[in-house]
Image (cartoon, rainbow, N blue to C red; front, side, top):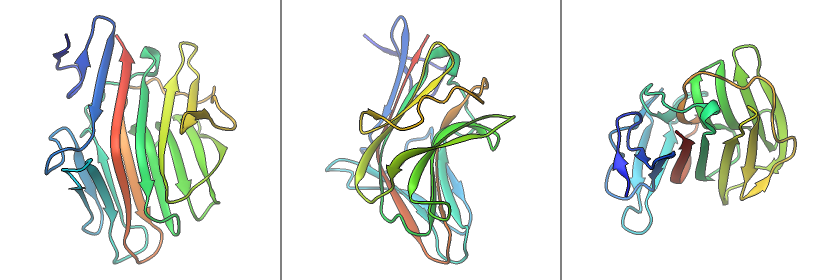
Length: 209
């Protein structure tokens, strides 16, 4: 049996592990998510009855308009507790966008996948503990298909990065691993004056007690 606890929003607990999953069923984003950004973007649930997708929209109007989802600064996830986070994500365009998927404290403390069309064709894997960042090429080309992105902290403090179940190039990262409490974070930015969207099928989290 699992029970709801207050340590992290919507995390279920067993004796030795915490779990969270959001598959975006229903007609709106759950209360734990803060959705915000610039230029009037949005996060809306689409296909709620046939699978559930959260669609993040970075709006037109100006280059660098952006929108994001996080837990409203409720930070309850730690590398030292071997946190694993998984995102099922589809870019609807890989042209003129920047996207981040990961765990976040602030702009200099994070673990993430990042794609920046202005910097190259591949997903990057990145960590920062305030003294970094460390950034490496995953070897995986960004496209518009569905993919599963997972970061997995190890007891040694290293972080492994996977796409579709396969360890990516240059993983694990072993430097600039943040020790702060973290929260899930998804970010989308348009690099031109043009709307861009990213679809999220589910987010799952596991953490040791």
